[in-house]
Length: 508
Ligand code: HEM
Image 1 (cartoon, rainbow, N blue to C red):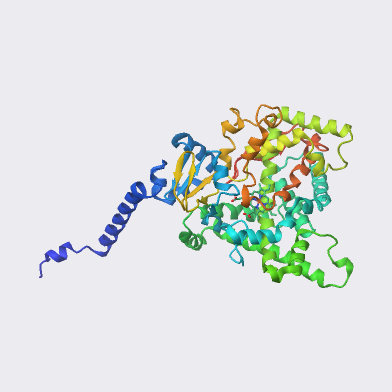
Image 2 (cartoon, helix red, strand yellow):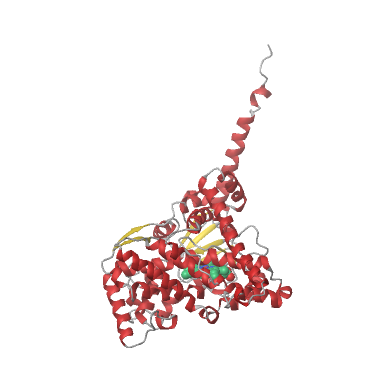
């Protein structure tokens, strides 16, 4: 029997070698991230500084805004939340990072939201620069306020259905889920504005096409993927196929894409028919996009796939955001009986002075009511659509944030749900819903407005900002003609994954 040689004894088995390599890798990596990395001087949790697994676990429960407020309380205005990423709570950083002259670029966070079939990077996920500006300019007129206002009366058609349905529920003394109904309203409005046709959610009184369930599956999965390193995302999706949630999310993406394609196909078919009645009777967003493509599509390289991209974007970026915003505003107003009473008094007084059209107030009339506007702004401040920061790469030259120098190329973002509660900007009672702060002279409204990030900022401001016009228009459903339903409202609340708290149910 041969004896074990010294060489054999010192040669590690495959398992041992793998363990040593793993251990060596992590030791070197930790030394690098903790002491040598360009962001090593910034404070934050230990595990965040060495691995993005911490970051993913941090956003997983869907309450990142609360966790990030606590992180800033503990570590100060700049916190390291990943080996290569910072967040800041400094209100001045909004201009530095998102202002028109910021020179920052979007990070790969956004790629998790890009449909795989996009011909060009969509506006939302595009890193920025000239290509983004050029592509955005092609369609920007379609989303201008004057263009959207042309369709205002079609939003009223959605409000009519919504009112009728609420009326029926009130007669039956039935409770309803406000979050579900605002989403159905938002989807139907998007249908009217983009395709001249409601999707029929309000009429059906339920998620009859499954889009709402689909986005419920899709959005949390996208947010989790967005916080992973890009190279892990495909693996996450692949292995995730075994998880019903991820499978559901991928199916949801297909469903929403398919729904967009169906709408476009129907329109193209209608345009082929020689019957005048079969043709669309008004200039909706899809019609305007097709017009651009016909007029100078070749010149600017804007074809059917790009129209599909735009319509999908409206569907996806527009419905959930509008519904979340509207729900957030209503939630706060309904929980504050004094605010509710003051608001209804303002609407009643304006009605008596014949300042409001019937049966529906117009956007112009709604936005001329100071207290209503203050309630909308305050609701948006307290309840922004997004609970994580929007990370940017700082320019190669670097930039100063909260008194520290951020090296070129580093990732850093502001969480709107954190900065909207800044006491320096919004007052010591920033944690309280108080619409009066916008109009009673105690705070500077221009200064506060500059720090509202609900629609983003600078060259990356929300393209569909004006499409959110259904928000003020919907107010009269609930506060004008409809206060009978809400007089005795008893509201229950739940948290929605990935968003700040929103109202689930209003009992009548
Ligand atoms: C109340 C409703 C809405 C809210 C709160 C909202 C919010 C936002 C925010 C915060 C951004 C900036 C993201 C960033 O800087 O990373 C954004 C961008 C964008 N939004 Fe909206 N959005 C709303 C409605 C819509 C609608 C209806 C559409 C589509 C018609 C839309 C399309 C877009 C697009 C295309 C971008 C990317 C713009 C760019 O980077 O050039 N949004 N939105």
